[in-house]
Length: 98
Image (tube, one colour):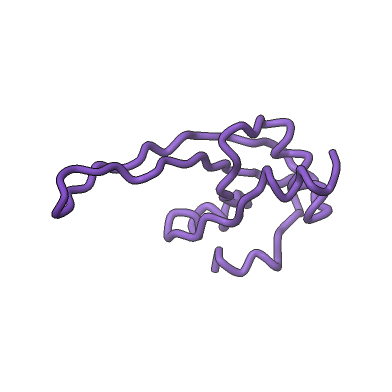
C-alpha cells in the first residue's frame, strides 16, 4: 500500500469516552474513509504505527437529523473502525485514548 493511500484510509482517531474504555482492552477507534476495506485499514495501521493488528471491525454511523431555523437538516454520516492490536502491542502515541 502506498503512503498516499494510508493517509486517505485513516482520517484520524475517534476520541470519545467509549473509545477510551476500548483502549484498555487494546482496541483503538479510528475514523476511516467510506470506501476503506478491512484489509486496507489493517495494512494502513500496520504501516503507520509499525504494530501487528489482530482484527478490524467496521461500522457506518448514520448522520443525525437536526432542526434548524430553515427547517430540517441532516448531519453527515461517517465510517469508523475498531482496530484490535495483537497481544503485547499498544499505541503509546494514541494520546486521545487516555
